[in-house]
Length: 638
Image 1: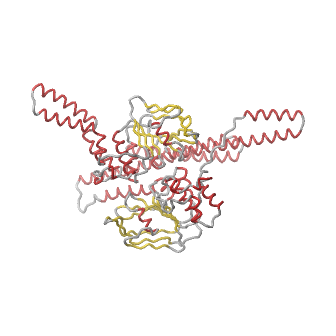
Image 2: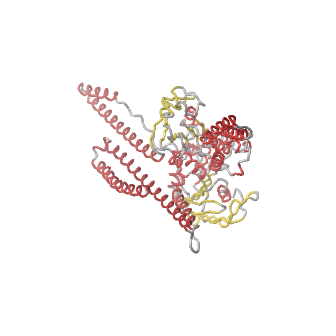
Image 3: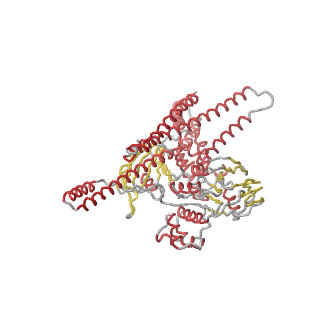
């Protein structure tokens, strides 16, 4: 065990944030903290990092272990360049290298015993330098910077010239190079593009230490986390597995608690009715029996009403009219800034009902395309044709559609003047703005709150073509799931830019990847996109080996090696999918066991038969999957 947290409690004023918070982190474990915005996740990390003191309880780091912490917002100024700032982490190796060079010079000047002594010192220095990976520290530093999205031309940029997000990436790079025994990360993916997030996932999965991360990126959590620590209404609950596993267990637990609550409420109501009936008889014996039942009722440990799933925010997207089948056609779209080409001659079209994700690295021009479509900036060349009866609703990640000086109430009433005061208040309440909060000015809102106001305006628009720029930014996981459900039930057309791979996986029918000034189309969600990318890369590598005439033996060997690697990757992918299918069925069977054990189901023969039948079907499927896994496992091991 590297970290132990026991009964941590923290409150600010009258508001209790954490209560009896207990969990532990094992060495090399990768764990995540989840919960809605305001649940206390950042507060917990600050307590663990020693930035904030708990009111009671303790967080104990094992003796001799080191801890590193990356907050959400990094504030630091330095006269260093990006490269120099990361190089400062390796001052011990730089000093060692200088001592080695000096020893080399000194050895040229002496002989005899002095030379023997210097050679011993030099051997000790080189051994230490090698043990600390000194010969590779510069390439490691470069690899970290490139992995986090910095190009070589960025290395010489001064820290003082960087944006807040870029400074956060530099701070993350320094932390990774320091290699503490336990890394605490608060929303590390906020300022990274997809390629950088994928790199960070791989880095953390292979990290020779423990990691505790706060993140709303569910795809990221699925890949790295083996334990989920949930903060819900000041209390913590620990779940083994990744985010998807946690979500399934959480839902089964919620159903079980809700059923237990409803059963007890029915029993209490029944007893109260019996007591009332007995008292109405107005006979001494009946009254005694009523009093006896009342005593029993008072002794019941009443179950508190569980929180219902996703009841905090309500969203429903309904187009006012149906658009034509051809929603938008883009031809030869071209744009450059200051002589730098973003994209050239882009062609694509959207049909009614399609949900299309536009993805690509930062700076490729994704948001620019959306702004051109919405006439916020002009294209250099090209044509955009909007189809018949198309009504556009636009969600801007910078929320320029909102007016800083207006109140929330004015934002909605001015945009939709036909709404009554009650309708405006009900709309804002559906997005968690109640009471006097509706009179707050937009400029006083946080990023997440502005996002919710923009979503409220979008819901009221009744548009049949939604254009969304990073709609999940600043939303907590529960709010993201509500938006996903709303989009999945939406009958209109959607074009959106997002870095949220889980969101893309759940909502996209088609993916447009903007890369190297051009678009590539993938007919499917994010998992399908990854699979096709891998196949394409393998195919390109293989075709690159084909030559007219006779290939050399070396080329053939290399080609075979590539084919074997591709086969191995496919086996590993199939094995992973099989394991996920097994885990899902096993979790469902656990949930079925819980359902069958409930009192109302034990006496309900049809319901019990239905549950039992489902479990039997699952067991048969599992048998097939177990055999499939065994076969794949053997093939992968060959």
